Image 1 (cartoon, rainbow, N blue to C red):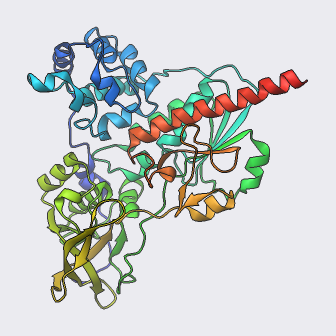
Image 2: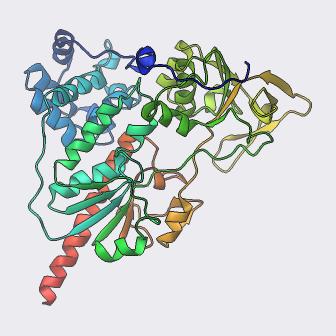
Length: 458
């Protein structure tokens, strides 16, 4: 592909590429599906949901055409339930536990959850009210699923909550980091608005450590919750990363949700490095931005990839190619990417986690003709901010007490992606939402206990 000046294409001409790929249920289909549910008393689907949504109850309310009741049941348990209806791996969670799996097919729980929450969005419903102010203030850094969930729960308990968000819009991963054709930005922003309507102040474009110092927050608020997620993709550590045409997968996805779409990938050959959910999103984004050929390169095998099965199937349907047991060695080009030199791998001895370690096969190098390389090999941690708060951590994974989510600083708690890893939790939106609820409970328990002790002492 020849070097050329990027020109902008009218958004309207690409809009269909980024609209939701899965259409919503029609009313008749939703009624038929909800009436298939057995409304189990001891429902395994509830146990399988990390946030414990009363699934039989909300489905029965749909069957009764009590749509506000259905949406309230969902959102009461999961403050980002509208997003989770679209991005949860339901076949592994609630639908995977459905008792009808052995008889016919599981209830379409995710689609029914979307049907109910879409109704609330379309009707501009405000589902909850704030609690009576209890005199306590909490600062939350980060407005992703964990931060929003924490804020929502604390506001309902009567706390004055302020969220600090570095980006222009709140919502974190759901707003910026999940492709629009799976999760439209408007859905995430509705969930943000539900939290804002509880009286939560959300200060966007505010960077802690730059605009406000950690010690200021520690002095002004009764508790601080870090829900800061993770950073950008780290470097590959190979020659040629400075060339034009090398992209960070997180930034690429964010651009498709926050900027005018451009023609950078039209007719191009793209190599995506990594095989997690972000790599899948980056690959399918590249295809929808006009790439002629997109390959995902992964140093292990299909069995070791971390992407959800439904993500993998979606990518294959989009025409994405997969190359297993391959890793990049250097990026070649004059000014911009032209080729990618790779080497084949084989799986060796298990590492500390039990996964077999990929080992290069000497002399197996080969070259791919590519126009762009997208890095999707995980994410960095916000070490500078973590250390500014003086928190204990393991390579950027904040250390917390298992039951209370309290950090090494008694006044500081943490939840979400910033504590995932090293055996702590799994990086799913629904898990982050549940952690936010648990953190709110812990903060409330600790602050109210302290308040009670102060009353006795006085």
